[in-house]
Length: 486
Image (cartoon, rainbow, N blue to C red; front, top):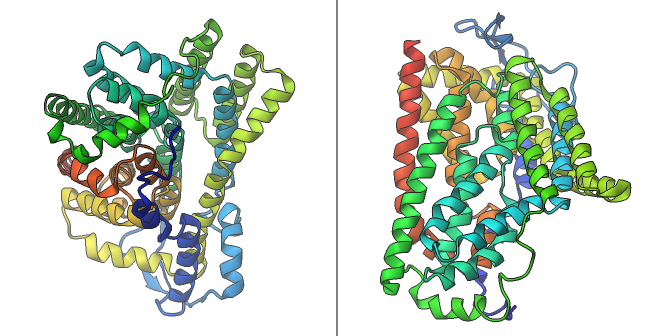
């Protein structure tokens, strides 16, 4: 590969480096919320059992002021720990979710060790040569499947070096290659259906099964994917016909020198073996089994974790990894998601501080007063706007889920809107923002590998963002109207 210092988009890297990590942001929020417990009056709602979601919820009109319990430095340090497990907190206890994430990470690590997913993607890419225009919808659909099922994000970074030479040889520009991967996986995450790091964690934090609201999420996924494919395909066709219409026309020759020298994109076997095909079937069947278990058998985090543990062992046996390689791949996969597990406890620590400081219900009451008079449609669109703003500061889908859902989801009870619609608004907003978010490593990393300056990416994608925003808001509005009518 050529010298990576050449035309490296340093401003983009600097842009990301100026933002603190999600861990720092969340810990600072814990400190801020602890300070607020000294200022905001303590209050509490009466609670009653909601049979639909199987838990106690706040009863509108029963809020009252109670004795304050301000949180100090020790409480701040204890908050992340209590976020994992606090027997006195109804909103905390993230240990089951964190363990599920680690077990899922181990499963993904074992599957990745067999090379099945990488080889399958490479095979699809190479088979499209000569039918280049079909490469765009097919590959975007494949990446979207990865996004909607297991939150494919960082894993996409490995595909840029393979796809970009293919795209450039086909007569398209580097932005087309970046868009296929980044937007393809991104729209899958935006329209998450069974994504454990968005839909499942958010639904758990909202105290509802993740299967609630699945139909609307499928509509957003399929509709959003169709919009994105049409947008990228139209752009690519115009660029191939007239190179000057590329948003990176000035960098085109540099991109060709960068990606078409040597053997870029040629390394690696792209033929799926019989064993790898079986592993991919097992991979898909595992997620199907998860949906079946949750929707009809009452499974939750423990049994879902056991499912992925068993599936990892089965994949290891089918792939003949051997005991040492199997356990090593499992541990490596779990280690890769350790940060996600930690951020779950850290984010829920904020809820613990609010709850122990007795201001969670006060904030809920203020929100009820502010949003209570809104119609169903205005309420859910306001939720979408709130989540868009929060996503810039907390790009982590799991971190934002456990931060926002315990507070925002109960508001749906007051507004007569299903909590599942709030979850859908959250994941759509987070997925939309993470197509451009400079605090999201996947965006900055993908653009850096593709040698696409951040400002050029914004020029390319802003019309698509506007179209997607209108589509998502329309889908949420329809969902709110139908839910209210029901």
